[in-house]
Image 1 (tube, rainbow, N blue to C red):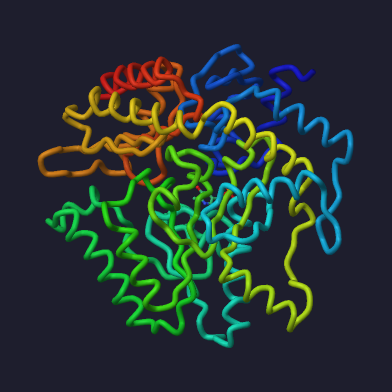
Image 2 (image 1 turned 30 degrees about the vertical axis):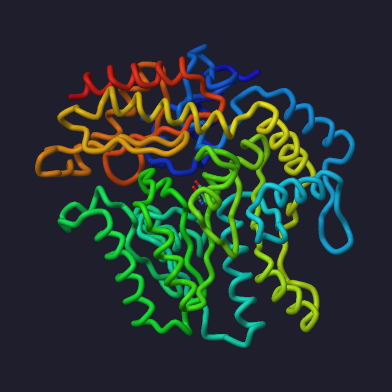
Length: 455
Ligand code: PLP
């Protein structure tokens, strides 16, 4: 067992943490919280501090911490067979079972699931398959992908480029082409346009149509979006947005990729956000909630119409030249099977809808009238509180004022973890789907104290 001093030193000296200020960490200015355990909605650190995790890790520990059912399934799989690949002619009972369980839950037009490791690599798989699809259809020019500002789709080379948040592009020279960004469906931030919600939807559609017109529909392969914007600010779409966008995509034969890395398997109070929002996807990206993060696993679910073309492509060209060593990893898929069973047996999809409605209403009640709260919004167990400098004129704080980080730190001081979202003064909540109403009350009460401490 390492001493605390060793842990701190080895961490500073050796460990490259993701999404971290590297210099501050290496100089020991931002000590690492070393997490040692978790149970239900709580985690515990090495000092014995218990924190209510109202962001479920990175909105992924959907069944909550400490579930022995999943831990046991992982251990059994590891003992029986820790690894074998899924390349031509190989599989395991766990990966085959999980593919059936995913398709049984997915929208009716879906056909097959490819398993990867995380959301970023799943979206990379999607781009390759979209390009392959159009090549097989004899449309080699139809390759551009439209994403939205504030969309988050990963931090790989192409997926970082799809992501419409400046901090993920900064100084990386990610390829701009063939990615295009269009308006985010973020009505609250666009009040300056002086439009009602329906006019704003029409504006988003007009911008998309103008982009398609400018670029040429025969150069645009796909549109990618999250049913509810996640990392960009936890923003449910305005009414009618998805219906109007899909009409345009259909007209121009542009594929729809629905990125459900956050929303699949219950977060919005429905098994898939696609079903809830009436989305007819050609590809659905899944990850986080697939295993509740007990093991890394993602998936790309392909529609029947895409699958037919992919199949034809391999009839014409030989086996598909795509795969990771760890695709459909037995331990990940065993975790996925146990996790989906647990979501069903605990009724977590229903709980996310019911407790989510309670939580969002309680948050709006507690903070909606606060002088610096511009917006309280949410859907299922996703909730965001957005802060403004001046409410009547809807003036936002400068980034340098760091209001979001100050609020998150004050809340942490109250024993609750939430996330200061990367762009704007937005505090995001996305707790485990097993949250109870009593736990929701704790989060709201502590956040009110934190807000009063900051303003
Ligand atoms: N897509 C969405 C909607 C996400 O929220 C995320 C991560 O938060 C990703 C993709 C990338 O997933 P990963 O971090 O597992 O690569």
